Image (cartoon, rainbow, N blue to C red):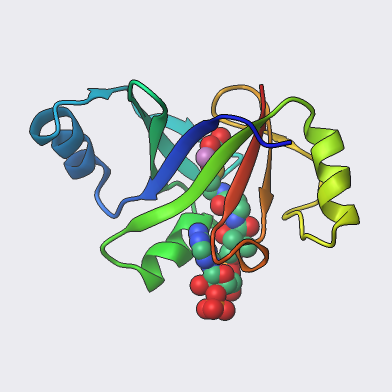
Length: 134
Ligand SMILES: CC[C@H](C(=O)O)C(=O)SCCNC(=O)CCNC(=O)[C@H](O)C(C)(C)COP(=O)(O)OP(=O)(O)OC[C@H]1O[C@@H](n2cnc3c(N)ncnc32)[C@H](O)[C@@H]1OP(=O)(O)O
Ligand SMILES: [Co+2]
C-alpha cells in the first residue's frame, strides 16, 4: 500500500533561521514559504535528490504545530509522508485494521494540492504518518 517517501516534516520555532540554515549552511534547494491556513501551518519545501524536507511553522491560533513546539521548543521531526495510489482504499484498510485516522476521516487537500490523511502517532511506533495520494 504505501509507496515512496514523499517528505519528512520538521517543525521549526524560527522559520527564517531554518530557511537560512538549509539554503546557506546546508546548501540545499529551498522553496518559498507557503501559507496553508486550512492546516494551520506555513510550509517550506526543500528539494532533495531522493525526497523532500518540509519545514513547518505555526500559522494562526489553532495550529497543531504550536502544541508540538510547546513540548519540543527546539523543534523536531514532526511527521513522515508516504505516497499512496488510492487514499480512500488506504483509509478503509487502516480503519479495518484498527488504526485511527485523524480529523474527520475525510482527506484534506495538502500542500501539493493532493488529498492527504494523518494517522495517529500512537498507532505507528510514536510516529505521526501522513498519506498523500499521488
Ligand atoms: C499543508 C499540509 C502539510 C502537507 O504536507 O501537505 C502538512 O503536513 S500539515 C501538518 C500539520 N497537521 C497535522 O499534524 C495534522 C495531524 N496532527 C494532529 O491531528 C495532532 O497534531 C495530533 C493528534 C498528532 C497530536 O495532537 P495534540 O498535540 O493536540 O495531542 P497531544 O499533545 O495530546 O498528543 C497526543 C500524543 O501524541 C504525541 N504526539 C503529538 N504530536 C506528535 C508528533 N508529531 N509525532 C509523534 N508524537 C506526537 C504527544 O506527545 C502525545 O503523546 P503522550 O505520550 O501522550 O505525551
Ligand atoms: Co506534510
